[in-house]
Amino acid sequence: MSHYQLTQVYLQALFGSLLDRARGDDRGAVTAEQIVLIGAAVVGAGIVGTIIWQKMQDGANSIPTP
Image 1 (cartoon, rainbow, N blue to C red):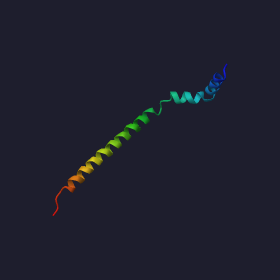
Image 2: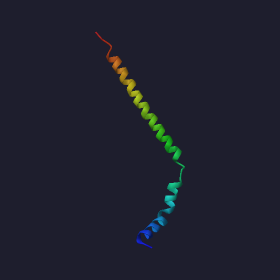
Image 3: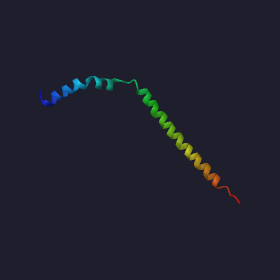
Image 4: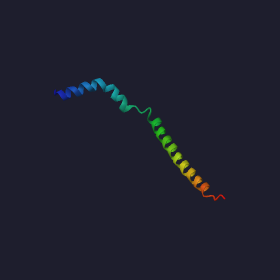
């Protein structure tokens, strides 16, 4: 057995259960997807709000005042 194979077996034994849990655990997947979608919706709403605000300001500034 080479040194590389020995190290690989040692690390698999040491971190095996942790890696199995990290690879096979899907409990938080739905929550993470929801967070990403909600974040995208908030960013989109902010962009739309900024565009509307700028259009309102441009319209208000174009009103002639004596």
